[in-house]
Amino acid sequence: KIVAGAPTTDLSIMVFTTEKKPLDAIPVEQRIPAEIDGYKTDVIQAGAPVRTASVPLEPLRDSTKYPTLRGGLQISGGGSNGAGTLGCIAETTAGYPNGPGRIVLLTNHHVLFSEDPSDVSPHCNISVGQTDQSCCCTWCDFFGDIVAHIRSNAVASQFVDGALAELKPGTVWRPEIQDEGSAGPIPITGVVSPDLDGAAILGGYPVWKRGMRTRKTTGSIVSVNATVKDSPNSMIIL
Image (cartoon, rainbow, N blue to C red; front, side):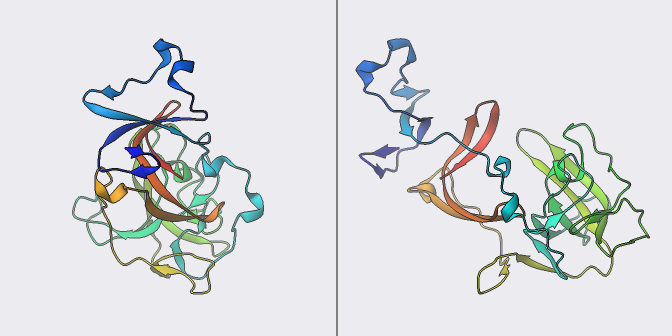
């Protein structure tokens, strides 16, 4: 909970509004109670939430063909979005249908599949390209763009929007995220699991991402498990 502009150690249910009014100017039936199910409430004035991927950012779009595959690059897999961002490169574990040790690219469900959560069939045959894919089979690659083929473990729900594809043998990759800074790509050194429900989020937990449309953006996580319009389980980053 934020009190007098400073964060406290009290967990709260945060309610965001574009205009915060004096209590006596709000009808009684529209007032936010001081507590909900034992948790204090906190009314925060902020701008209307914006999904950065929905903002027209074509001048920033990075459609460069890179010799080394890494997170943050444009890929295309015939999904409903046409093209999207490669999140990172990963290695499968024992629970993967094709066994452990497979090197895969991780991205969103809508990059490789349609928006229908029940649709787990690959589109445009099975090729995944960087930057584009050419609707080819497992053995052909007419333009040298194909980086992955076999798709699996697609999930689209209110909790997860994910899909992966196994890299084509011989694809050059590195555990990095693309960055335009002078230092070049940023290496992935591990997995961080901050206590977003506790003290770690006080004052905002700093994060950054690299999207093929937005390039590098930064912010701080100020709320988790948020409901924005009809989208539950959202994260508010300011």
